[in-house]
Image 1 (tube, one colour):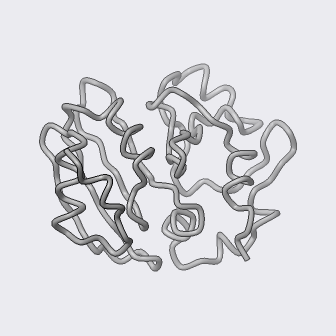
Image 2 (cartoon, rainbow, N blue to C red):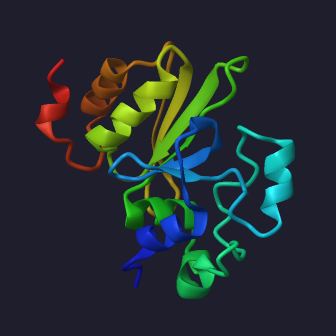
Length: 176
């Protein structure tokens, strides 16, 4: 039903190295570009609001510059009870928001436990920030809601271990 969804999302959104423009991080640590520049109308937003997310995390619809439409290939994604949770569940992506430096408040949301590569990527740009962490179920129910003051990889791993998140966490992640 959702085979190829991650590849479709990469084709639709594209990849960025700028954490302020990202919306999701793939299992292998790549950042999906949520600047809006992939959309035919998004280019104007990108010029005005460079380095910011200009589309919502639930914006899976639209046509990109290549003429590709994610929801045409995966129409069932929008019919799911919680399309964001479904997207994270079927792709293994985690959702995040890295607020500008002057805000110092960011968040991470996941359905499946983050991979080591996702955690490493988060650490590159969230270290030292205040971060809200939420784990949701496939239907969008909150399973865990925590806040880390002064984010670090060690603090995140401690929370994941102590909360016994619903996915299996490789023990190799807990070597400090």
